[in-house]
Image (cartoon, rainbow, N blue to C red; front, side):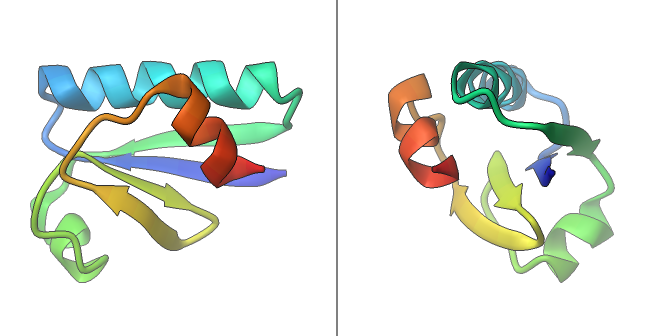
Length: 77
């Protein structure tokens, strides 16, 4: 099971990234848990200075943009 985290303040881009990430994981048939991290200090501790960010199993995979579902599927595969 993968742990997926969306880091950001809850803005529209954060919501889109969460939606695209969930769609990608479901299309891949992946078992996952998703967490939205909005705490600024936790985001900074993760090394993210530009949101939104996608963290997979504790590793920051991308930040500062909202990729397509297809691109996220590549990241998760």
